[in-house]
Structure formats: C-alpha cells, structure tokens
Image 1 (cartoon, one colour):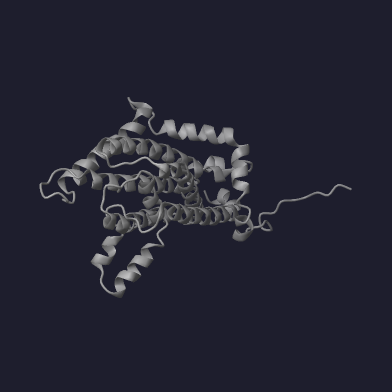
Image 2: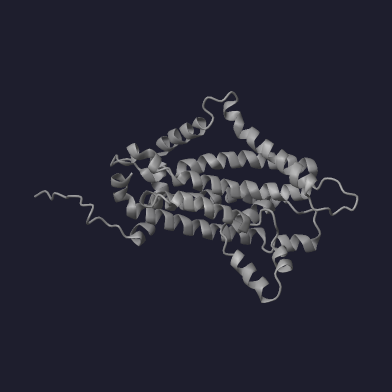
Amino acid sequence: MTTIQHYSAENARTSLLHHAVRVGDYPAMLVRRHSLLWNFFRRDLLGRFKGSALGIFWVLIQPVFMFCVYFAIFGILFAPRDDPAGGPNPAFAMYLFAGILSFGAINESTSTALGSILGSANLVKKVKFPCEMLPLVPVLVSMVVYIVGCGVLLIAGLAFGEVRIGLDFLWWPVLIVVQLVFATGVGLLLAGANVFLRDIGHLYRIFATAWFFLTPNFWRLDMVESTFSGVGAGWVANALLFNPALPMVLAQRQVFGIGHTWSDELYAGAFPFSLPVNIALSFAWAAFALVLGYGFFKSRRHKFADLV
C-alpha cells in the first residue's frame, strides 16, 4: 500500500525554533544551488552599472572618490591638530575611512536585502524557488564593493604610513566572512518582516542613521568617559558594547594596523579589546543574527506568496 502525503500550509511547521536549529540547511542549499546564486549575483552586480560609460569600473571609482572627500574634509579641514604647526592629519582620515567602509558595507547590504522579497514577487510565488537566496545576493554585491574599498584603504594607508601590514592582517578574510554572515542574517530578518509590515523600510532607515552615530565611526570609545562623568559614563560605555557593529568596525581598523602611530594611551582608549576578542564578539553576533534571521524567514516563508 502506498501512502499518499498531502502538504497543508496550516499544519506545516511554522515554529521559529524549529527552523532556527536547522540553520545548517542554509549553506547546504547554497552549495547545491551555487550556479543559480552566481547568476543572480552577476546580474545584480552588472545591473548596478548598466548603461553607464565606465561600467564595472565604478566599483573602484566610488571608494577612491569617497577617500578623497574624507581626507580633504576630515584629514585637512576639520582634522584634530596634534601638531602645533598644523598640516594634514592622515591618521584621523584613515581611522574614519576604515570605519565608514566596514559600517557602510553592513548598512548598504542590509538595506538592499530588505526589499529583496517584495522586489521579486514573480520568483517568490514559484513553489520550488529557494527565495531565502534572494537576501544574500545584495549582501554579496556589497561585499565586493567593500573589498575594493579596502584595497583603496590599503594603498593610501601605506602611502601615508598609517597602515601597517603584519600578522593581524591574516584575520581580514575571517572578518569578511563574519560581516557577510551577520549582514545575511539581518537581511533575512528584515526581508521577511518587510513582507508583513511595509513600514519596516522607513523604520530601518531611521534606525540605521542612529546606528551609524552610535558606532565609533567619527569618535573613539575613550571619548565617552571624557564626555560623561561619574556613574553615567559607565552606563553609557557598557550600553555601547551591545552594538553589534562596534567589534566589527574596531576589528576592521586593527587588521590594517590603523593607529600604530598613536601614543599607547590613545591607542588603548580607542581599542579597549584585542583583535581576537573583537573577532570573537563579531562571530557571536553574526551567528546570532543568522540563526534568528533564518529561523524567522523560514517560519514565515509559507505566507510570502499570498502577501507579495
């Protein structure tokens, strides 16, 4: 006797925990569908520059131009003056540019992944299509731009003597993977939530602005204690440590040796944790984001086709 199995959306497993513990199925699926993922990645990357005269070269031009702007504004015009004689301050410009590259990649990839499901309604409605692949595509594209930008940072930093390549640089590929996993997890969570509540896009833009200024992009952690006094400084400093982007931005600067020309006191204030600790914290946030994002996305997947 042959048993006939019927699928019922009402009786399907929709528990977030049920799918979260099966997060290992996600990379396995990506390996099986690697050719499909490559085609979507290539289409999205080339589509960004379709119709432009310089085409794919904009991937390089954008970070070069961004560095020139940051160096002119924050390295010359408004740079902190450590030297009484004045002059450009490339150390602060490199510190700023490295942080912007790391946070910008996270922000851009998650913001773009947010609308990936609603923007591909025709694919989502296909039963056999793995729509959990869609939020990953813009994350991969943003990581390409980030890597090119880091190349600009490396060349400029070596030219100014503000970047030092040592053994810490070997952690950079690990940091890339960690940022990729974190952005993918957040992207899955936002893309799935955006299907049910279209206000998520507007709310996330507001949140991302606040998130940017709460991350040490323009400031150092030691400035918190000098700005707040008494018990308040401890509370604020401890609260900032729960920012998932904080260890990633600090690790970004440490792998490139930014700050090696500073005094020991200034360096310790800007980097209270060692590079391995920041990598470990970043990995913990990335794992948490992926488990939560994948679990939520898969638990709500059965309703996407009716809502997009």
